[in-house]
Length: 334
Image (tube, rainbow, N blue to C red; front, side, top):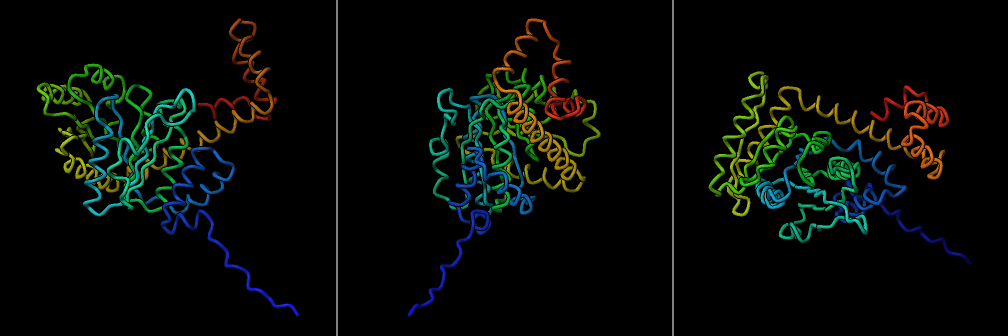
């Protein structure tokens, strides 16, 4: 005589657990994303429909400007206001392991015990501007998990760091007194992408000079009077938390301004376009690698360097070999 056994209940999958607030599922999802696991793409495709709620804030500024301390204090302030906060700290890639050199437990350990704060350090992996595609994917996972504010802290500042605008809705540029090259970096391109400036370590004697220089640079913007939002300059001392409540207020005001003027939708459109182009570019590179192979690729590169071939004809020939029209190949790579 046989007895029928009731099958065990089906276990919820990773996406279902993440959407239900399971932190382990979220941590697992971010790990899959960072490791470029085969199942990550399908998972992200499912998560996309559940996003669009979080305020995504980017922090950039020269190394040593105190970004990590400022981000930690801002996370604490936002928690006081009842928000759930996610932090993605993009660190320089280790030349040995490819992983992040600095860990979240070292830099932001005081927040680690809060169940409504999620922190992850991610390696930049040599990405232009220090912002890997995986960073945006991790933000998507945090957004689907219903975090209210997601902070991206980048490696540093410079011309290439303007890439942060492709991922964040509000960009905070942090500078400090005593770093003259910081103002030069702002002149080089960071100035125009900042929504809020923070002069950290404002207790230093030359802090007012830095504020004055920033005001002077902003006054050179010929379209400043036409802008709905004029980037404020906040003086802060991250180690004590001074200026952090004002920063939280300005971030909330900037988000409201974006919504009221329609700029939030416009920025989202530009970011979606940038992300799709990045994915297409990645697919193109993978297809070339699979078709050509490293050895032949090396020979072609050497031929171009030695002026035996030109890059334009070579690129067109490669595009035909992988079944892509040369014109389309150029558009995807731009």
